[in-house]
Image 1 (cartoon, rainbow, N blue to C red):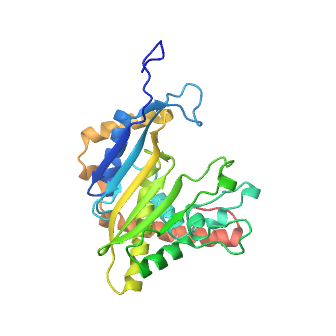
Image 2: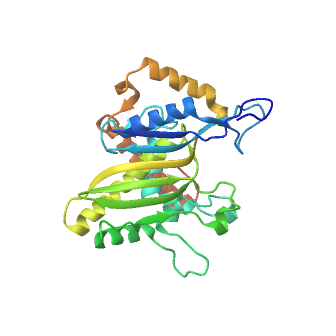
Length: 285
């Protein structure tokens, strides 16, 4: 389509990836977005930043806990990844929520496990509902948790990117679909998927106990209406591309047994940080 001076692409590309494990699915989706993403400005751009590369993403991981499970190119250390997992699954940072004091406006865990509504006396534990709904009818299509609060998020500076988690049991496997309105492909989406699939594991374990039969972790599907790579870190992303050409997939990833001791150390550090927080009131990890 022409605007009279230059050709402009108005269609948002669709990136669709299916892979056996989490790191493979992530890097394929990121690379497709880099290669095919539409150039679009963002509300976070600084003067001189190139436009982001943006696409609608459908990312399917056939076995979320297949090895290797962790990609080395994540923009954080293993300790930070473990802290984020605990933040989403266990709510270790829910006490940081205090927008009136200039602190966090929400966490994903708070939204799905203690969803508050004006006029409602008690917050809603949506994860308890998911487990109960699937324990009563594993094939139910109604087992979901949502995060969006239009009365708060419409004017929020940093509204929740995660919109919905949808669970269902197929045979002996629990599937999960996570829907994101916006997702930083390079610097956030792996951490999101890593934590959400661990939440999937936690629900599967609870269902195993409730149903009296083993429910395994099944397919995970991650969709993002805007899956993007920011122009502000194109230089950093170019180094990631270079590593893809010089290192094998095994060299680009970690198996769980390799990083297990590091994760154990991280858990101890996180627990100590939370203890200090309780005593001093200062924010830790």
